[in-house]
View (cartoon, rainbow, N blue to C red):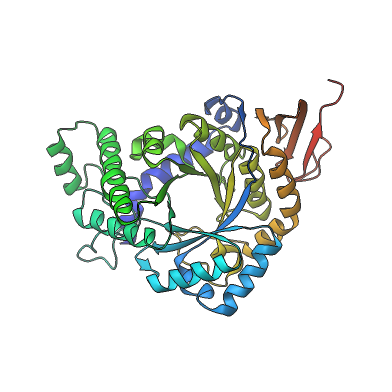
Length: 405
């Protein structure tokens, strides 16, 4: 199984490695320009996801919930996303209901989450199903239908994590036959057609039938250059779902940290304002990078920023990751977020209702972000370097009004 999973995802990892290895200045030029935009005048929401490991573990007890609730309230979290399925592991429906009701009683908005991985049968000679799903498999499609129906019977709102893509190609006999039957010559076109069909027929149709009030959100990964190749069509899919989210994680390997800000603004632009939030995590990044992602998600105009996840920051058991990514310094990432939380809340309050202008990354590693609010001009600056630059301390942030200009 492990070698097969690596094969399926290897194309993406290799492409991303090549991209990130290129010159940072050239990278900035490759990002599509985004227009200025008014940020909705709503209270920014800070939320956290809880993977199946936590929902089946720490949060299944009153004591574990009480500890988590105290931390969430202290640092301004008002919304939770409880996962019901991931990597072949499920949370019993009765447990989801119990935890949903317990958290609602404490004043939290509670939504559902599904990670659509390992939905095929286990192949002969393998220990478990492949991680990235072959979506031409009727059994896999039936399983995602079942998981979505089960989730919307508990939660009105459910987000689908970023595995609604396809890596299948000439090496997959099942997809090869399906592609031929559809008379589609191009693999990229085939994947987009297939994944749109999965979204429309298997995810949304069953969910709406089970719960007419259900609202399903599709979440896109951070590797935006490969969307069309892997079956994503954000503008079209966002219109179908009504809302999308995007990953704003940049992690240590990406030389363009401002991508977290850019992708938030760009996704909102190309989907006609349907991008509801940004999602970042503590995987493969330093505490400074983790907090940097939080700033950029807000600076990009997100209405909600989701910290993924309880398991990485607050639990002794981080749970399984898809491809061996590690939360290398979870305690330090949590402590860094705790220190930054008051300033992040202030920034979020400021950005709400403001006009987001241009933003850019300087050669010195300091990004500048222009805003207009109440007829006054402001500039936010964030230092992404490990040393003081341009009057800012290492990884420092400031927001100043442009007076007399």
